[in-house]
Picture 1 (cartoon, helix red, strand yellow):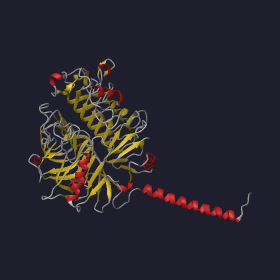
Picture 2 (tube, rainbow, N blue to C red):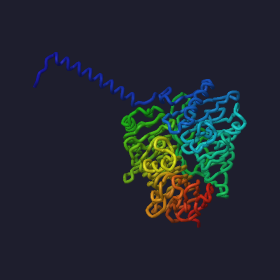
Picture 3 (cartoon, rainbow, N blue to C red):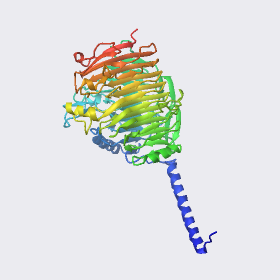
Picture 4 (cartoon, rainbow, N blue to C red):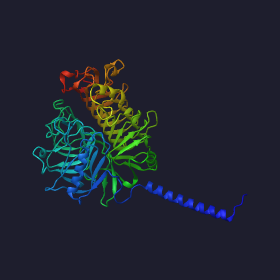
Length: 624
């Protein structure tokens, strides 16, 4: 045995004691970090979340929102993200209404337990965007993407606006825009802007869980309204779908007008929402699953479901490494992503049942080095909401995976994994590459509004014209948009566009889609580049050859082969011919270039340049 002098032992003792202090301090620090936000008071949501309360001067609130709109109104491919949250109370008066304009990557949401707890006297609007030099020669809503409006009441007040602007609350938007949990009254809601350079087309959108006044669809090409109440609905273009909507128009005359109306929604779960309770505590409400539902979820008060206190969430910032986020998820935390762009070089891994991943202000996960940005295990009850996922420069196998293709996936009909307002981009702000954007392998999954987009325009590498389109086809790689392998998957509001093979492939049994919108890619250079074996082109919606049961309500496939107008696509839809596979109210349409030869399986007339903008409809398939 080696003996030690007293001096050595004292020094060793002091070192051990000092080390113990460091360990205790580090443990305390880690425990505090793991504990997350405080139980009381306002959590740290980062610099791009602004919380308003009714005591603030209305001029201050108006100036803040105006400044952000000025930054974001043309910032289509930018990296800035914002969320503006209103505490319960009233904002704006008859003398000084609050008139909000919403630009790109901006969320406007109330913090009440029900939408009636936050009241805006004024308007919340999106107008046509004028693209060339700030004039009005090219004003449209076809690119008014990526914005959110939810969980508040709007008493429409146009005081101070001119004659045309005072005629309605304008919400002229296209894909990746949701309106949820709204109570709008006192005027008309217009889904197009007929004041800025006259009526212009808008490309589609989504409303859920809302009480609406008289609503003018106008030039909206496709739209889904789900689980809502509407005083009246006027106009339609190509493809308007209603599910579980009190006051929805009758669809008996389809396709004149082109309405598709389901009395109830077969499966729904409303998007989680942040709210403040009577003690000023922040919580997230996770609505319960509903089957065969109709009308708003908050008619009798708070939406049925469960409440998760904010201190059970890890509130992530874009600077947080993925290993820290995964560590917090593994400890049992839920995840709240604050506004910003997150570079993801390894997967965020969601492994625990019933985990909630909630993004604010269009929080964006960008793949780095070919990573899969978000990987959800095949467990029940996970909810992912309000998140955008971007492909990176190195090809990713998939951008969001739910369950393993050949693994053990446990799903339940009573507690489906749910994706709400989850959006995908392959290209746009930069070149992107991904084999598949969304892959669902689990059974019992609900997709409640998604836009899965391979960029047809953008910044670097996205020059216009034939040479630019050819370059885009070779470099901006997105083969498949949505691939559904699980059984009993339901999609309410499935928007998928511009992928280089099948935009949607549905291999699972007992699938249901309520509104499908697709635009085929603009940019195949030649017919040889757009061949599926011996078949000309890839259908916009493909149901697997072995599937025995599948239902689609309201589907459209559009063609605009801008790069080579001579290109043909044989079918807009391809499905197995079997009694259990039913397509209800489907159409194809030509937007001035290329041809879709048939609507489905060789049935239906060509959508070619002799009928630009005039859809080819089928009421039912099989036709008998």
